[in-house]
Length: 84
Figure (cartoon, rainbow, N blue to C red):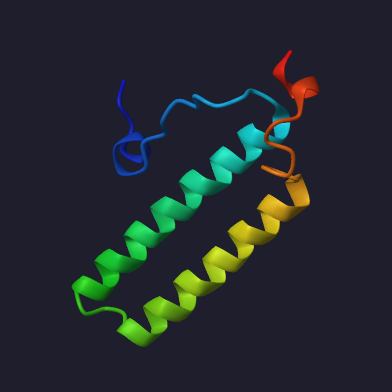
């Protein structure tokens, strides 16, 4: 059965190198995209100013960047030990 949450925020498959860090970052990235979508809709509807939207998206981006650094995603893209 399709839930409202599934309709509003569909989750997509992960196609990358499967390890815990990449899966967590993928979830964070999808959450970022969902929130940016909500913010842009609120801005388009006139419920949020462009300045406020920019500030919120900038904060979301900083959080996403921080999680990427903490998880170490993409630091050694050609490390052969991860390819097993």
